[in-house]
Image 1 (cartoon, rainbow, N blue to C red):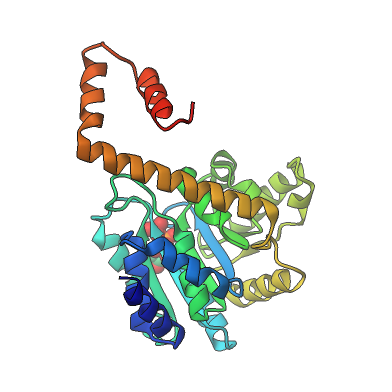
Image 2 (cartoon, helix red, strand yellow):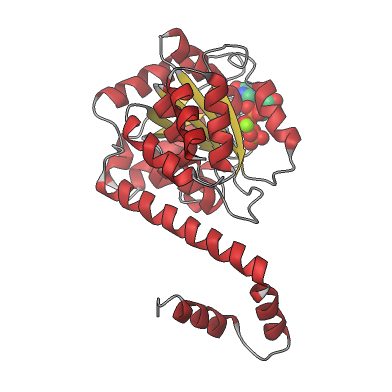
Amino acid sequence: MWEDWKSLIVEMRKGSVRGLARLITRVENREPGWMDAMQMIYPMTGNACVIGITGSPGAGKSTLTDRLARELFDRGFKIGIIAVDPSSPFSGGALLGDRLRMKEVSTLDDVFIRSMATRGALGGLNLSARDVVKIMDAFGKDIILIETVGVGQDEVEVVKAADMVLVVCVPGMGDGIQAIKAGIMEIADIFVVNKADQGEADQAVADISAMLELSSDETSSQVPVLKTIAATGEGVLDLVTIMLKLQEVGRIRSSWHEERIKEEILSLLEKEVAYILRCRWDQNGNLDQAVKQVIARKKDPYSIVQEMLALMHLQ
Ligand SMILES: Nc1nc2c(ncn2[C@@H]2O[C@H](COP(=O)(O)OP(=O)(O)OP(=O)(O)O)[C@@H](O)[C@H]2O)c(=O)[nH]1
Ligand SMILES: [Mg+2]
């Protein structure tokens, strides 16, 4: 079993795209030994710059990601793309759509695109895009773009794993206000007003800038706000220039930052504990049992969890 993993990692490190894809799939499926494999991969990571691209549905994230990837590819960077689909694993249409929308780069051999569902086959668990990032990093990608819809906690978590975060808005629609609501304001390193060919783009830029000025976080006022038309590529060059400049002056969030490592360990632990418990409970029927007891008003979820914690010597 372990030999299997090892030879796959060696294959991937030699530059096999097939090996890379298979490795990601096996890790995503939590095949036995995946954590040992990740342990072997970890020391090979730390070189890639991870860029999160988030924003409301339909804002043009995929189109922009495609343009950015092309531009960065042309400058000699090795690019990996992760498109995180927050909806069900059955929305194959959306995943396929991403590929179609990334038509600039989807045909380039050197650009590796991977779609993943945050709520996968593991019963509601959101798998970590981090693992996929690590594998692409070990493969030798210089820049990894992660596209994710900016709603909810899962997505915030995904972008937390990034060195730099682009928040994509569109003119009108009160996007700026939505951004604050989703807690995205704090994580934006660059704001992009896309679809600048539609509506009042300048007004949107002014609104967002004003909001950033008002923010209690003093670094917010330095966050660049740019206009793009991803559909034609307008403004993308300026965006790339600013992104590279930000990276040059020291990564926005170093992957070796204390907070990030802490977050990474906690998130991994939470996911694994939840996954293990869920699998066990599903198998031994304890969860169904507990549900019945709550419905019958014999027990409540709090005491059930407390008993469970006591069993694990955690309380
Ligand atoms: N007019 C105009 N249309 C654009 C622009 N950028 C993207 N679009 C169009 O907007 C639609 C949505 O674009 P996507 O790139 O799929 O947007 P998205 O944010 O990735 O969408 P989801 O992943 O579904 O949330 C597509 O029809 C694009 O062609 C732009 O700058 N101007
Ligand atoms: Mg998209």
